[in-house]
Amino acid sequence: MSEEVRFPVMSAAEGAVGVVVTWFVDDGDEVTPQTMIAEVAMDKVDAEVHPSTSGVITRLVPEGSEVAQGSVIARID
Image (cartoon, rainbow, N blue to C red):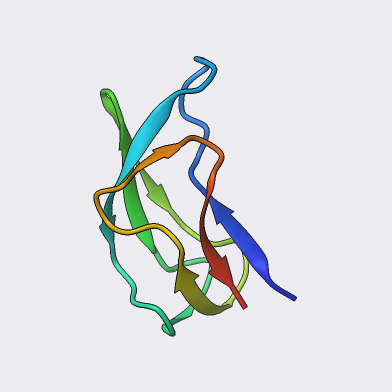
């Protein structure tokens, strides 16, 4: 069973976008809910992204990409 990892909702503004600042894992890495997989940013707010399940990660968005909040940025299989 796979999990979609989404860019966190950090703004009430509809259509708000942010940036995947840094990936801390590579495709194929094993991750757990304790693993910080990425840092994301919107305007003046930064956030850490952790998966809610364990498994193997596939990154779907390149580092430095602008992404709409709530968009899928990775998958855990």
